[in-house]
Length: 244
Image (cartoon, rainbow, N blue to C red; front, side):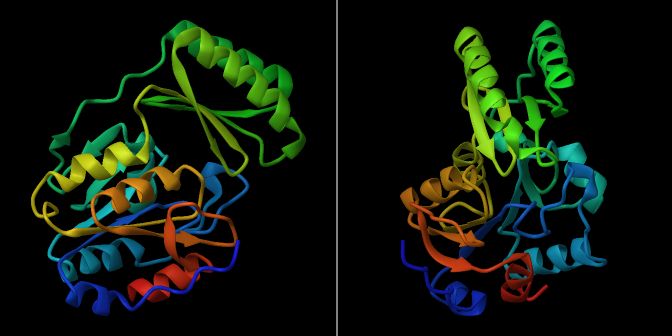
């Protein structure tokens, strides 16, 4: 796949019509770390995001695989539209729920996942919508994790989500396309042109939804993308493009 061009400036895009900006977090706004808790959040990022929200007339949303309380643990409470747990937990800037609340996994199933993870050497992360198996410290675990996750998903009617050294089991309907569609129905997003910026395969769902609604995606990092129109090289490049 040939390298995608860099996007026009944010100001130029916004001049062509009201813009609604959807930003992934890990790998997009901040660099990926060996563990979910090991990320470095630049000082002032939260304030800069609030200023960007104001520049866009409120049409800024964060869309993360993290649970919202986890996201706020790194950024603090933000009066910004946001979606956690891969789009299954959507909130307006004032905290109002958009769409359906996330459904968690049964305790018995969570126990089975934790037992497998402990036995095989995965790190686990419970989320409102499901559970994650992290293997960044040992990438050779990927195949065993996928076999286990697909068996569990088939038995329990779940979906398997892939990411950078993470495999997630989630309830059906938990994806970032749902987040984009839910948020785009609410004020002040409705009628704007959605742009989704993300670095991982799970962000392709959000980019696809943005394209279906008349917008486009921006891929971050060196990876193929079926739904992006433009690309940026790194979280540092994303921050520069956003003027943060």
